[in-house]
Amino acid sequence: MTDISCLFEPVTLGNLTLPNRIAMAPMTRNSSPDNIPTDANVEYYRKRAAAGVGLIISEGTCVNHPGASGYPGVPYFYGEERLAGWKRVVEAVHAEGGKFAPQLWHVGAVRKAGTPPEGDVPGYGPSGMNVPGKVNRHVMTQQDIDDVIKAFADATRDAKAIGCDAVELHCAHGYLPDQFLWEGTNQRTDEYGGSMANRSRFVVELIKACRAAVGPDFPIIMRWSQWKQQDYTVKLVDTPEQLDEFLRPFVDAGVDIFHCSTRRFWEPEFEGSDLNLAGWTKKLTGKPTISVGSVGLNADFLPQAGETAFRAAEPASLDELITRISNDEFDLVAVGRALIANPEWPAMVKAGRFDELESYDSKMLMTLK
Image 1 (cartoon, rainbow, N blue to C red):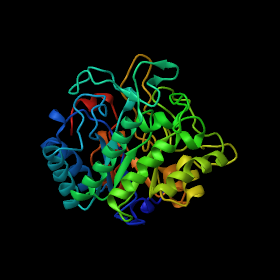
Image 2: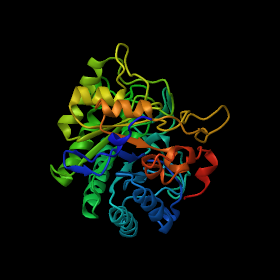
Image 3: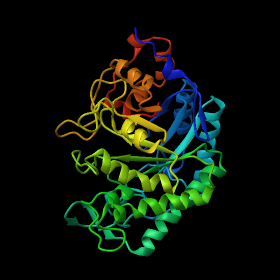
Image 4: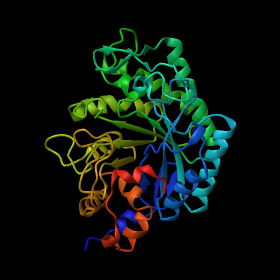
C-alpha cells in the first residue's frame, strides 16, 4: 500500500501554517436563506475541520455589489448579520484545529436579471458578454470597475477583522475577474482590453486593492483556471512561456498562493512534461500552489448530456496524488465532491478505511450534511 503520510504532514506556506496538506474545495451549496450563514452552514464546515481538513475554503460568498450574486441561497460576505454568521463558522473551524478562508465571489455576466434577491439588477461584464460574441449584459464603466474592486477590498478587510486566516479571490470558471482575463468575453478597447497585460489589469488592480486593505502579512489566494463554464476547452495560455508572462503580474500585485483549478489533477498541462497546472505555476512563480480536480474519484465533475449537476463518481486510488505531493509538485490538494460524500474523508483516509468510502452522487447536493 502507498505510504500516504506526506498528505498529513504540517506545512507552512508563507504566513499560513496548516496541520496537513488537505484543503476543502469551494463548492456552492445554495443553502443560506437570506444569504446569511446558518447553524447548518456552521456545522457543515465544522464537521470537515473536525475530520482533519487543514484548510477550509468556503463556498463562493458574494462581495458587496448589487450584481455579485447569480444564484439563489448563496451566502454574502458583507453586512453585520452576515459577517456575524461567518465569524461563527471561523470560530467553529478554529475550535477543531483547522484554518479558514472565505472565497470572495462576483459572478459578473453569468448573472441573469431577476435572480433573487437582487431582482432586476443585470449581469455586469467587461463587454456585457456572458458568452463570446453575444452582448446581453451590462457593459461595465470605469465607475463599475472601481466599485467592484472596492467591494473585494472591503471584504478582504472584513475577513481579517473577523479572524479568517486568508482569503481566496475567485478569478476562475468564467466569472467576473475571469471574464476580464478571457479574450472571448473581453473585447474592450480601453486599458482593460486587448493585450494579455491589459486584460489582466482588472485582476491586478483587484489584488493590489485587497493587499492594501490588509497589509503585507495576511495571505491572499488566487483561484484561476484555464477552462470556463461557458467553454470547457478554453485556454488562456498555451505554453509555459505564456504562463510565466500571465502569472508574473499577479505575483507582483500580492498573491501568496495560487489555487489552480483543473477538472482532472493528474493531467499534464503542457506537452513534454508531466507537471499539471499547479505544478507549472509553482515552478514558474516559486509560490505555493493548491491542486484540485476529481481527487479521490474516478470521474470528473462534468455533467452528462442533458444534466446540470456534478457527475456521479466512485472512490479511486490516491497513488497518483501521493506521488505528485511526494515530488513537491504542489503544496496542497483541494478535495471537493469526495468531501460531500464523505465528511470524514481525511480521517478515513488516514486510518486506511478506503473500503468504507462512499461514492458521490449528485443527489447529495440536495442536503447540507
